[in-house]
Length: 403
Image (cartoon, rainbow, N blue to C red):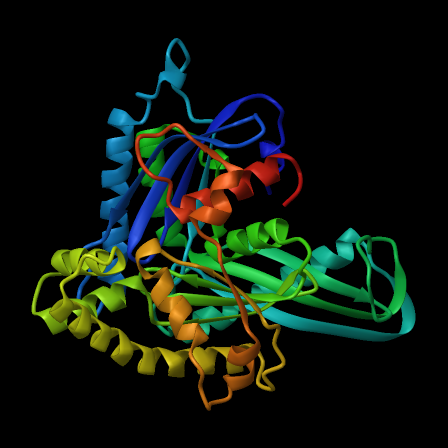
């Protein structure tokens, strides 16, 4: 899918991270040792008390239009563009939950006679399972009759006669054991995003590639921490936390639950009887240790209340990943800097539920600015968010044929 990115010459790509509470974009120069940020911006959505799916989708489109409109006016001001054609080579769009629907399935095929693992054999499985997944989604939608596009599909962790081999094509076996991974997005959502991108970037749809953010963050975590092939990745976004279970360097299970940065801020706004914007400011003051004592006590009460609900979600998601709680103890977390410490503290608390052993032995690593800043350069006028930094590292490794 990314073959067109593998080139040696300089290019500037536009990276877009569409979350469920914000959109971040960046134009990044590739072709040197490290990606170089030329421009970056991030816009948050207007958040309702109970986000409605349609309103959330419409908010995405309005925000994407606004942020790309700003880019069309200011995005080429960097001195890099002096005396150069102002052109974007490719666009990478990363989608967080709930904009994609994932499926991971353990496939086991046994035959009495030997058969060959070929490209046609793999393609046939993918095509069959893709069709089954789409039909399942259509049945769930009932009369809505939504259409879906597949943006990711692969077979990973493939075993031949019980052994994981890097090169499986051409191998002969009676037993096939692997994990299927498919991600789909509603066709209308993709069309609307692509229309807005083309409106401001004037680039062919063929040069716009969609991926899921959990897959991208998994790829980056795997490459940065290459000495560990088993871990759990938590992506804390605006409204949702995505959990990804990785075994033997492959994604084998995913889970999500409705808790994120915006939920915390809404709870603060309710408790302090204030607006969402002022609640954000209160949280920033708390993180920077500039909040007055009365405010600190009140805010910490809110955080404690949220943790009680979050702990139930966390336990249920881990059980969904592994009903027997056979899980790795290494956890990587991505989250906005103003809530990352809160979620790290949540995970580090002792509990008497089924997560007690996991929590007691957990090694928790935050993939934040400290970790990521060594992998890129910033010549933009704004701080680079963790999310677009991860996109840039992924894109760069893909150009080099690593990802």
